[in-house]
Image (cartoon, rainbow, N blue to C red):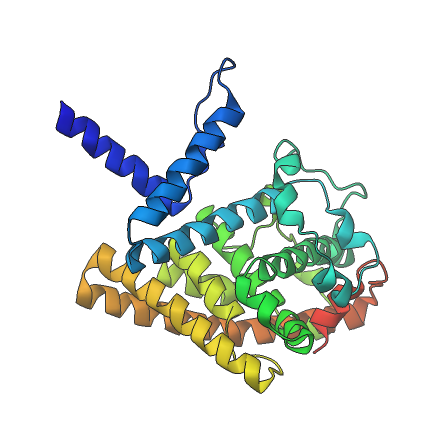
Length: 327
C-alpha cells in the first residue's frame, strides 16, 4: 500500500505545481481554511525549490490558465446581468487603463442566469438587431477584459494595446459566439440563454438582404469541430498576432515570440493527444480555420457597420463599441 500512497502523493504534487486551487476542493465546516492555505503554500514553495519544473508542466499550466479565464468569461456571458462598464459611457482607453478586470468578479454572476432583458427585445428587424448589438457589445467588452489577462499585454505600449484591442476584440467575440453555438449543436449563432435572431426575410431591408454572414461564421467551425482546448489556444494566437493592427516595431517582436510560444503549446497538445503526424495535420487544419475566421470576421464587421448606419443606433453608452466597429 505504501507505493499506492506515494503514487497519489506524486499526482497531488503535480497538481500543486500546475496551480491547483485548494479552496475548490470539498471542505467541511470544521476545517481551518487559513491553516490549509498556509500548509499548501509551504508545500508548493518546497516543491518549486527542490524540483525542476519541466517545460511540459509550464506549457500545460498555461493551457489550464487559459481554460480557467475562459470559464470566468463564459459565466459573465451567460448571465442576464449586464456588466456596469458596458453601458457606463467608457471609452476603449478607459477599459484598457483601468486596473479592475470584470473577469475576477465572475462569481457574482453565477446565479444570475434567468435571462430577461430590462427592455424586452422586440420583434421585427430593428428589434432583433437591437438584441444582437446588445450581446455583441458584451462580447467585445469581455474580449477586452480577456486581453488584459495576458502577461504580454502589460508589456506593450499603449498605442499597440489600443490597436490590438480594436482589431481583435470583434474577431474573438465572433469566435466565442460561434464556438458556444457549436457546443450547443446549433447551426445558428446563439447568445446568452440560447437567444438568436429571428428575422422574417420579408422585413429585412433590401440593402441587407445579401449581407448575412451567419452561415459563413458557423459552417467552418462545424467542419473543424474544435475542442475547448483548441478554442482557447486559437484565442491566444489571435491576441498575439503581430500582423493585425498598427503594432509598434518593438512590440511586434514581443508578440511574435508570444505567438510562437502558443503555437508550440497547441502543437504539443495535439501531438500528445493524437500522435506526431496526426497532431501536425490537425495543427494545420486549425491554422487554416483561424485564417478563415479572420476573413469572415472582416465581412461580418462590414455588415455590422452597414446595420448601424441603416438603423442609426446610438452607442453613447458604449463608446468603446464604436472604436472597435470603425477601424
